[in-house]
Image (cartoon, rainbow, N blue to C red; front, side, top):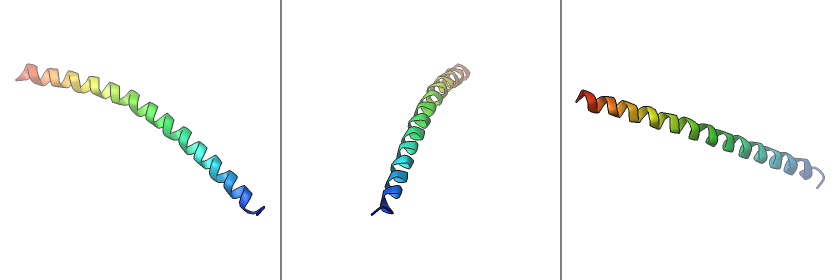
Length: 51
């Protein structure tokens, strides 16, 4: 049983790290997504103007 304890702790630690990384990535992608949406809107306006 003592051999199992460190494994479970490392698993919990890894899960925590992965969760934090995922949250950070989601926040980062949301920021990028908003900027990309604005860029796409401007591009669409340009396309409409050209047509």
